Structures are given as C-alpha cells and as structure tokens.
Length: 281
Ligand code: PAF
Figure 1 (cartoon, rainbow, N blue to C red):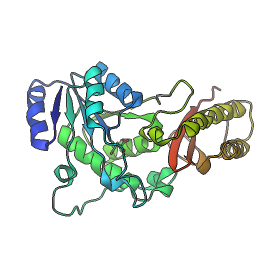
Figure 2: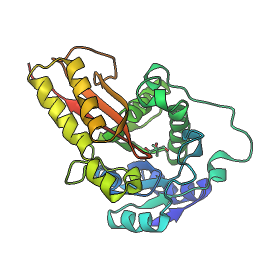
Figure 3: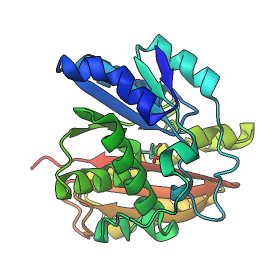
Figure 4: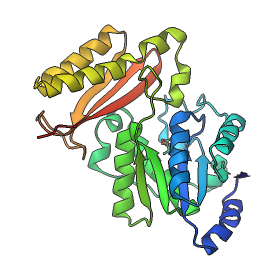
C-alpha cells in the first residue's frame, strides 16, 4: 500500500491504472477509521481493481463551535487497518495541499435538501462537504465512490450534486455498520465515557421499537413523540427526531417507506442514526 500526500504524487501513482483502464474505487474519509469505514473499503475492493482511501479532516465542513481541532487524527493506526483490508493507495493531504494559499471563492450549495435535518443544526456543513468531495472526485477521478448510509443526508447531497454537475462516477451507498449492541459505528463514539457508551445503544433500540409501532399502524406523530421521550428519559438531549421519505421529502403518512432520523447529544457528543422502515403492501 502506498501513501501519497500531494495531488501530483497521487496522480503519478494512479496513472498506470488509468492507462490500463482499470476500475478505480474511492472511499473518502476523515480518518480515525472503524469497521464502518473498513466495510466501505471491502465493498470497493469487491467492485474495483484499485482502491484509494482519502484521509482528510476537512476544516470547511466544521462550524465554529464544532470539534475540528480535537477531531481524532490517527494516520498510523488508520494506515495499518487499511493495509489489512486491501487498500492500494492512501491519500492524506494537508489543508494547504487541498485548499492552496489563495482564498477559495467558489462554493457548492445543494439547495433544499441541505436546509433540513443536520443542515438546520449545522449551517454551511453540507456546502463544506460538497466542496471537498467535489475536489476529491476531481483529484482521484474514480469510477465508483463509496459512502455510508449512516450519513443518509450526506449521501443524498452527494448523489444530488454528482447528478446535477454530471460528475462521471457512480455513487454507492453502503448499509450502516453497527456494534453488537446496535450502536451505529462512528468516529465520534470514541468521545463517549464508559457510562455514555452503555447508554448510546438506546438510539437504535428506540428506532427499532418505532419501526414496530409503525408497522402496527401507530400514527407517525405519536411514534416520533415516543422516540423523543425515550431518548430524553435515557439522558440524551435531542436535536431532532424526524421522518422523511427515502428521497428526503417531508411526510406525515405512515403506511409508506420511510426513513426515521435521530440526532441527539450524549454529554458533549452529538450522535446521529437512521432507520429505513419498509412497508409491504
Ligand atoms: O463522511 C465523512 O467522513 C466526510 O463528511 C467526508 C465525506 C469524508 C467529507 O469530508
């Protein structure tokens, strides 16, 4: 496995694969890798000849009071894990390498779907994601790019601008990786104290109960209230509990396919999760 830290170095490393028309798979990450990321790499490995993983903590997707400075940077450990799952090239650029010295004047705003859910709590976040992912796509020029469904809204935003801007690649969404107790894997889980870690699976348990209630025809409003109450009782501070259609449209219907979304704080750690609820006619 090679590690490249410059755009030029990465291009040189990829040029034989490009010349041989090999399929390039790309997994963008911010590092501090866990099984969820490694699953993305495994999926890329299945489909592609060459797998590139980027590790870049992107400053422009963090708000002023968010955890950019403290975000865990664990390149050595990440590189070891990536080598074990068959990554070919790690791209780990500096902020200067990605953004240069001149001010950036271009932004990418994806519109309505970013002014909802996490976008409401984190203004500018999805613009920052859209800019960095577009830059990374232009740098790596992959055939396939892999993203986790845990960040469901992020995946929808990426699919949208890839379509709108005719970016020539296919986006693949990979199901959420969970710990044995149901907690969705996230780099931020590492911030949880032991006691908070014991509490955190309540998010998934509550979502599963909500799924059952919906299938037993409890109204959507009542189900959302129940989720909120259960999380609050467990000691979480709820940012939002919402239901959307799989295309992220608002809905109050409950006999159709839905996605339930939760964002809640446990202490200082903000956790998100979602569950796709399917209805068979
Ligand atoms: O999901 C993430 O880790 C980040 O938002 C991404 C897609 C790597 C962009 O910085």
